[in-house]
Amino acid sequence: MMDRSVCPICGGNEFESFMETKDFMITKESFSLVSCKSCNFMFTNPIPDKNEISRYYKSEEYVSHSSSKKGLINAIYNVVRKFKIKQKVGWIKKYAQTGSLLDVGCGTGHFLKAAQDSGYKALGLEPDEEARGFARKENEVNVQPIENLYHLDESSYDVITMWHVLEHVYELKEDLAQIEKLLKPNGTLFIAVPNCGSHDAKVYKEYWAAYDVPRHLYHFRENDIKNLFQKFGMTLVEIIPMKFDAYYVSMLSEKYKNGNLLKALLNGLKSNLKAKKLGYSSQVYVLKKKQAQKRLKFQRFFVL
Ligand SMILES: [Zn+2]
Image 1 (tube, rainbow, N blue to C red):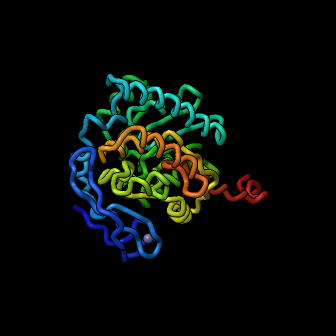
Image 2: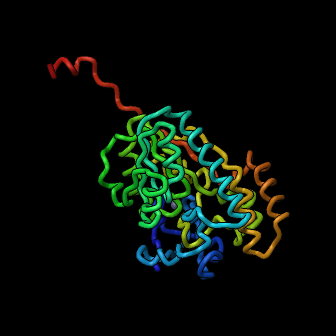
Image 3: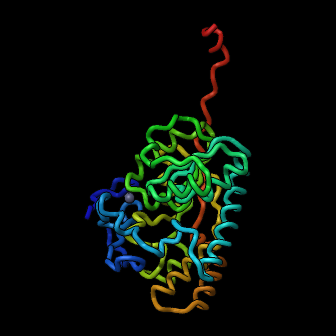
């Protein structure tokens, strides 16, 4: 296990314990969440060593990695997933009609394929070899190992997306600094993460499925995202709700506490209704890189 001695966002070194929760999905092991005394950021501490984490991902139930399962829940999941992928492409179109797109943590590449089909020059990065194979074979997209994040050309992407990925990343600030470099000036970054300030998080407490320890290393709220990206000179320009997540997360949370489906649907609905004040269960943060500094008009003169 790895003990964090400094806050991953502000570098502060005093924490308060916030909650004990469990890996309900796979190992049933207990983990602690702490909050930073100086910036209030909440994170899992301690966390498994980087070379130990893969054992927490080995599950039949980690649905995001498979798409061939049977059953009603899975059928619904696949319909919703298709809808959500269309939605994502729509959100991006608002900021960049076309251009180069990098999807970090692209999984089996379904979103990447949709982006490619709608005209983007799309590249995905993914740590899981099996998922990369699936993405290439079934979705015919260009996917590289995640380490290549540090080997891509700087200032070359109009859009970078991280759909429920940032909460899994070990080197938070290092990777984000690199991602900022890869964006073109005025390029757009889309970050989707769960919001532990949401109504459903407050209702389900330690059973809230989106704590998802130890896979989720960080538990972001709107302010954390603002604090974090300020360090990279990036500006938060929009927050987009992910309304399905309130239902999905409530269903999983009810499952963990042996509750019932009806309650889950009610809590999902309530969470969306209360989101004006607390934020949605999951949100997409749209961030802009700075414009390039304007060239001096006579600069060309000297070049000639
Ligand atoms: Zn802090």
